[in-house]
Structures are given as C-alpha cells and as structure tokens.
Image (cartoon, rainbow, N blue to C red):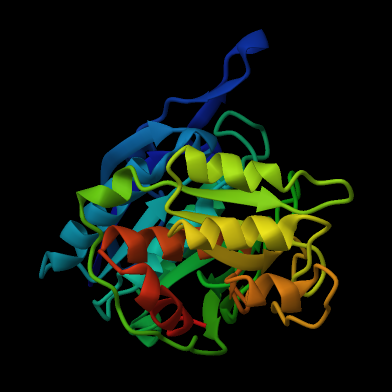
Length: 322
C-alpha cells in the first residue's frame, strides 16, 4: 500500500464564495483528501491557505521546504501539492529544480471553487494521488496533474483562464484512460540544485515586457531598485524596440544580470535580428533563456543568484538548464 502526503497551499481548490467579496481560500487540506483513493493512504497537512496570486518567493521557498521534509519521510511514497493555478507553473518549476528524490511530486488545483456545483478539484486530487503513488513515475521530478493529463513542470504554462484544461506545454508524461494511468514519456532531468538559502526569499528579479512603444528606462529603474536580474520578455524570437540594447548594456555594466526571453507562449529564444533585435541585445550582455518562459527563467535566476552565483559565472550556470 502506497502512502501519499498531501500538502495544501490554498488556491481555488480550497476557496469558497463570500458573496460580493469574491472567492477566498479557506478550506484545509484535510477537506481535499479523496473519498475513494484505492490501495493508497493519504495524510494531509496545511502549508499555506492563500490564493496563489498573493504568493512571493518566501512562500515558494516555504512550500519547497515542506515538500523536501515530506520526501525525507521513509514512509512516504509520493507527495501531492494542491495549489492555485495562477502561479502553479512557477512553484512546480522550483520544486523540479531542487527535486533530488526519486519519489514523485505532483501538483494540482482547480478552476472552479470548492462550493461550485461542478467543482473539478476532487477529481483532480484523486488523479494526482494516483500519479504520485504510481511506481512508474519515480524519477520523473515534479509534475503537474490537471484534467486527466500529467505533464512535466518544466515548460508548462497556464493557457486558459477558465477552461477545465488549464495547462499546456511541457512534456506529457501520462494521461488518464479507463480509470487508470497510461504512462507515455519520461521528461529529461537536469542537475539538481540545492534547496535555496534564506536569501532566495528576498532576491529581486523583475520581468519587463517588450511591446510597441515600451519604455527601456523601466530597466534602469529596476536596477536602481536593487534588482539582481531582469528578465526581458521580448517579442518573437527575442527582440525589443529602440533603446533596449543600450538599457541592457547599462544594466549588465552595473552587475545586473539580464535574461532575454520571449512573450510568445511557445518556442525558444533565437537571436536573429539586428537594429535593436536579439543580436544587439545579446551583444549588449543579455543571456538568452532558450526554451524557458519569462516566469520560469525568473525562478531559475533567483535560485542561482541566491546560491551565490557570481555574475561572471551566471551565463554558464544558467545554460546548464537549457
């Protein structure tokens, strides 16, 4: 019999409507234990009870430490984390970066509140528990189980604000069929990073988006505010408008890391264009983020910088995870 630890952090799956005040996360994790979970025992405990749009890096760190403690329990075979969908992709990626155990860690949530007549949380939790207890998923890192599909944390994104199938991207690792789990792939694993130190909680990494008429001075402002890194979510394959190459040069010259990502939902950064495009941005010191979206690139940067990675070694360390 497999034993699963369910860690609750809040989100829609734990939320109930409060009239005109909107939905608020209030349910404890014990309320999320599936009524029917087969030959699996489930123990629940709360880490947080909050909407994921309110999380900061200290909260993500707290979740990662709680998962690490659960995995260290020799009686635990896997961990399920219930989480708000708004920022689940960031927490999942952090958990994947520091996941050294072969035991599965599976994140899930809901698109509809716990008091909704068609709440999707119970089914999502049941499926996540099945995935976390499945021996075939050992060694696959942190995963996201949602609406019948289990996918890798890396590359996953929330792709719809309200649809039941909220996530896309990543590698499909398994899916539900006929009441059972069909395993289809194993995601590539990268070198495991140590659990972040306390500095992770306050390290400042900003995201700035390129668009017609965007203000490059925002990057200067981010540096003045003490940002250790800035992720530039460029257009297309990694481009930005007038003034950004100069802003990148000023930022990197001051010791601030600049990562070049893309606001496009899919596809890698491929510096191609001059006249302020990716060729000029990288020449000015920006580090391409490869296939990492801006928000997962931000998490990786925060982990590396809080661990003491020096600016001159940052590019090499970052590219290990591309």
